[in-house]
Image 1 (cartoon, rainbow over the protein chains, first blue to last red):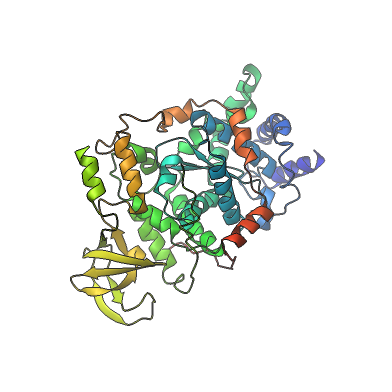
Image 2 (spheres, each protein chain N blue to C red):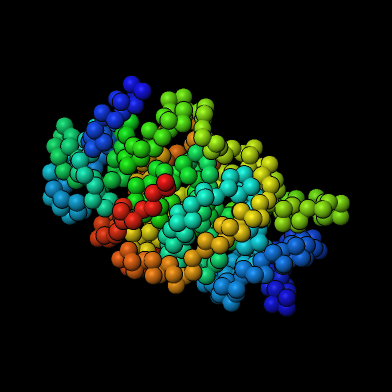
Length: 290
Length: 158
């Protein structure tokens, strides 16, 4: 608790021109609702010092504990809309690949979680704090472990650069007055108030540059992990085949630049830098859903 | 049924077609400093024969050789190893119409569903139970002969 308070004070100290009372109040509410939820989980994450100021790196200084709690709420909501594919070996396999890729990032000690959810849509989702899910529809398109690694690495990119968290922080500041009023009247958890309705936040469009940044991070993390760096581009090429009006890619295409644009930008960024890098594709190890 | 028979008759290894996204060199080998054997212009049609890392071996009207994968947009019909996915889609009534018309109890995920989603604690706990530790991920990597290496993040293209 003391540690957190220090962080909050520091965050406030460096935290700009927003009304201090409001922010403090919000922090307090968030903290209260979050504490019991994440208590059993943060063990691994505790004490992990991230480069670049870690805990205070975000706008307004959301602590890692808060970040994980927000992500956990969103993940629980997402699973309320689409449950896990009931295949333990699949889920374990995806966690193995995902954790290995995430271990190559600057936030290796977040409590990372990965999963495949029941949906024919082709999509993948990231929530703050390291909760990452892809749909059965997307998984079915994959031809190798390197492709899975590429997809997960893109989502890891969103998490480590806190793309969704930043969106929430912006709207949170805008809505703060309302949120505090709601606190007096309502019975929802404060975290739920922060994230809006259900898992809507994962369906929100990020800035186009955030998507392209996540693509660039994905090929780098793949290469660092020893995989063929072209796993994500392979998947993007397949996604490019789907017609824009195909229902299974509707949400994906609405919230992301078209795969062709992503490939073009990625090609420009990669240039010849990956020519000397050979990695594993591991087609045979890719777990096939029964 | 006839459709299914046709699909099965279609050889799975059929060459994939593609289009050059931009002008690029066709090289004798999959390396940047390999000899240039021909030049592709944007829009050229190619037949994809083979893949090697970030390179594709292609055949085009201008000649055959290796070209950077990201200079090619893969064409039409085939969805790579996902041929089976095409069949599944057909079986579930999705193919052709572009809409989910009938499924085997598996849903799509639209914004409304996400918005109205209710927190599912048991399912979340189940998801969390599959977490892999950093050490176990390392072991998994070793089994796949995956060796970690250094690589700097990429700058955004200008």
